[in-house]
Image 1 (cartoon, rainbow, N blue to C red):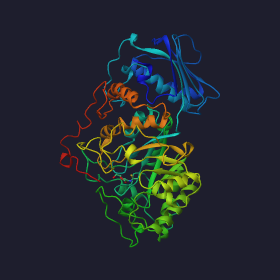
Image 2: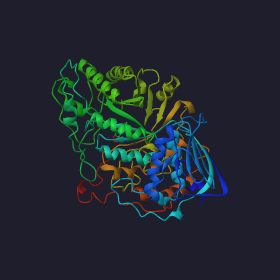
Image 3: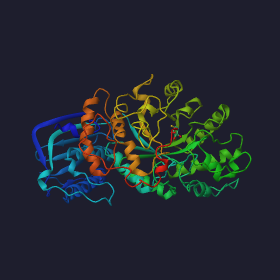
Image 4: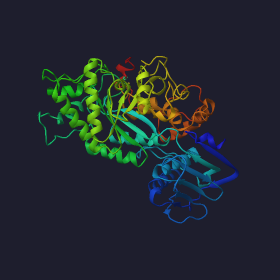
Length: 533
Ligand code: TNX
């Protein structure tokens, strides 16, 4: 096997050192200080769980050690890293914590797959092979990402994911150097983020009711297994962000406006023109709800919600939705979205919105996330300085079925079903965009049919891995056959981690995944595979 057969996404430069091999001994140490400490601790834990060796973290290296060395500059920025494996040492270099995190993920992939253990701390550990197993081929790697934003989106509104589940999602994605997690926090069916009662509340709105009503919802009535209720307190949200930051993942919160707001209309009567709350609606329907452009309380509400969310968000982005406002009317849409984007920008954050909002006058630098429909407004906004985040449905939507018989997933995107190859063989720089105008790539998982992580993983993987390589590796370096082989090798790692994946055709999988539906059979199977949005 070649050194690169284990590496996903493919690094920029890989030079095998023929004849050299490093063998990890139980007496090795991890050498790290300062900016390298967090990644060193993560490597220590990984190796302790995977090999049984308790490697100490120290500051002066000798032969046989793994050292993480801070360098002043490295081509490719804060996420870039170098990795050298020789007979007597492993050396990781980076200029920032992000680079060390990435270097550790690559080193992890150079170890035999047997280093991988279940990701959930409660998962029963696999037996650790004996000390002679930990042999790594000599190599020199220099690596840096093509795009700065490499994300997944989790729709926690349609189906709730607990804080622990979101953290595990971060663990899985991080190994592929995916570095952004967009949380779709609100929608018609639910409101999943706590908004606290403000000191100044001119219209006396009951913000607590958003999560009391909107967090208690079961599910849109489709999907396999019991529905999910719950919401994140502001402390939960901070906790998720801290966990993510230590793993080089940025959290991007979304409040979907001015459509997809039925849960808010149900919780806060004053948002309705007749002052009467909407009933909660748990179907998977889209496009039927809207805020009212003519009500002053609409803007008071949005200012409070975006203000609180911005104040607890550590990252630079605030996503304000903007999609499928089918009953809003064009003029009302433009009036509200222009104002909401302005309010968002006033919080100091960069606003992000689905591409419908590209029709509106936006603050400088507002990010446009393309999902479907006309591309011209997107290119025009890009020309005026708006970075573009690429999520074209046919090459990035992780909720789409792999084949028509899939028990979960949607199938409304034309040209489907889609497998790993469609999500691999495309380029984010398209339709007249220039390389520097593309911020990156994001794969959304809408969860009308999804219950919990195991089902989510089954839809996400391996296609999220395709996206990770599209976002990280250069276009000329990407090659379908090489990727197919590396996916096959990856099967054993995912399987050992306890991550169910789709045994997509065309790949010789090195191990079979566990059954993502094993714990849901019989609980809700009358609704098995009924949704066709
Ligand atoms: C469209 S994609 C939506 C979501 C749905 C999805 C699947 C996008 C920006 N909006 O609200 O979940 O289709 O039905």
